[in-house]
Image 1 (cartoon, rainbow, N blue to C red):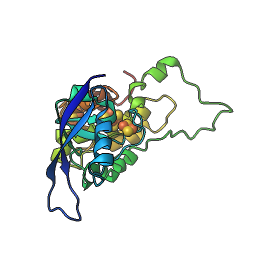
Image 2 (image 1 turned 60 degrees about the vertical axis):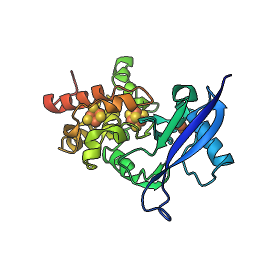
Image 3 (image 1 turned 90 degrees about the vertical axis):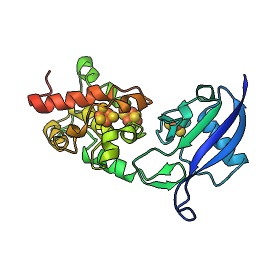
Length: 237
Ligand code: SF4
Ligand code: F3S
Ligand code: FES
């Protein structure tokens, strides 16, 4: 495996001592197939224990390590050194309050997620086993089930940067997952929540969200389908 000498710049901010964020530079010897997350760990564990970041699974599943890497929203654990070398810049995702260094306050993001009622709503008596669904009906929302709530999409969206009241692509993706689920009965309520100037109508089809999504979800297609359901008054199209 080839060794790589990496120059790393990280946007640091400690609210207890800093008035504003500032860049700090590090040099790291690593391998081309290492993850950016490994590089950040190397810095934290061997050079500067004050570096603060959030991560858990290290395998692209938990969604906790979205950050701006060389100018693009990505997961640190899904980005390899060979794709960013020889210079790596890391910043916190934009549009959410920075708590410290690369850790942002996710609460405003999760509040919008909760707004779309992201759970099955069906008041009929549950059957003895699972509520059945045809493969075709299941395929209708397959793409949007892949979301890991990393916030890379919402925090790359110019409409969200311009107005933080925009519900954002992640919440729309999550709403789509239930709106197009044939077992759910709250389609009208969820559509009503999104039928607002800070709902789907804030999306200006900028496509940043699609580029940012580590799960390769076709977010603009999902947003388009929700808009269509609102305009047609039905999900049957
Ligand atoms: Fe992350 Fe993609 Fe879900 Fe957005 S849609 S929160 S980018 S996984
Ligand atoms: Fe924003 Fe994506 Fe729409 S980047 S404007 S939500 S297409
Ligand atoms: Fe879990 Fe990266 S650490 S997605």
